[in-house]
Length: 96
Image (cartoon, rainbow, N blue to C red; front, side, top):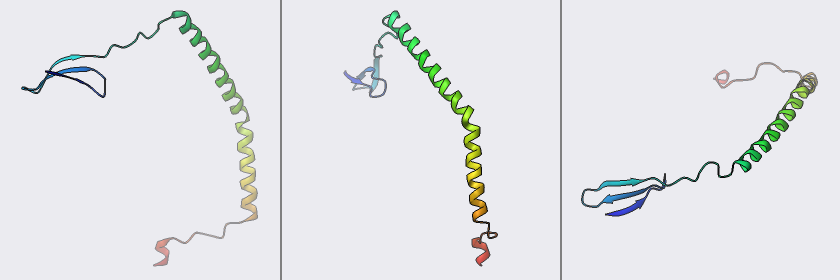
């Protein structure tokens, strides 16, 4: 028998060369999700402050979004007045 490590899940497989079958399978041990509760709580509080900051920034952008769209519309309207439409564009099928 020989042991092979799975490249995907990093599990250890014992394979019998005669039968070409997996005889045993041992999954990789995962570290605990939270080692120290105090550090996990501190990290979560830091994330809360970051979420609040992102929310405030998004709210400020939404308040000015209407003004930005109005300025863009005015600029495009001015460009349309300076260069009026000359008619329908020529399509490939019109050339035949």
